[in-house]
Image (cartoon, rainbow, N blue to C red; front, side, top):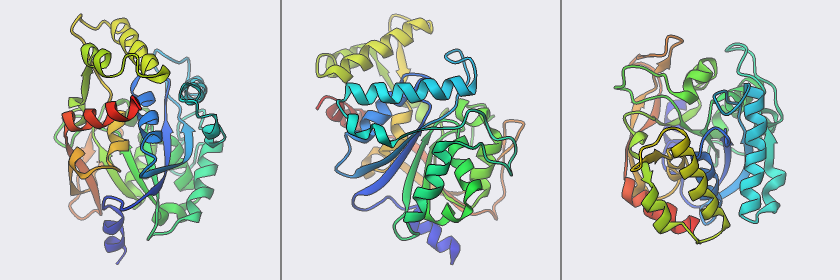
Length: 303
């Protein structure tokens, strides 16, 4: 019976649904697109929370610094969109990764999700879109396991099941959190990076043609993406993956991607999956309709 109920939650949502977004917005350029795309999809997605996630790479001095920079970048995007009304929804996330699979990384974001999700039900769940290390979301599950049956987690993380490793930025930063998520029994939709969503790339001419001059946000995205691509050693004919958009898009049109049910894998600390055909099901995205999704993205961002 529990498996049947979960399978129902793993169907595409019908009608307008409530969504929270967990994002390491300052990490690279794609989170900004995803946040704006979610806000511009208000006909189906009602934004109920925005959480800043920790990250640590060349753009931060620590996970805590990454989280704080992401928090400020979320506010920046909202200002560019003239959506100051949404700023009270923004919460700071964890300053570190999970200490263990039994201990949450305490934060305002994790506590907010642990409380907010209790307003929902198995029949009408809260959709939690994760486009960062899954620290905040796993922490909320550890703080309040009762939310497991009240949420659906749509996570861009890990690589394709056929990929030789799981050394993907979101997953490898906090393997303990990924294991909490995949072992908890919560309804999970996975959008794998290499081997699936890595096909969702955009070029400079496309950005200039479709977004330049449309509004302040669009000009910011074009300039920021171009600067980032050249800074990272992009060739004159560079393209950039903006994969985070796909996690938001799963909640929208059926034609934007293809998925299937799989037995949920087990992320291991050696950066590989283990497989057990007796484990519960999850929804696995295996194809992105690249042109169709970019058409929808460009249309909404330029409004």
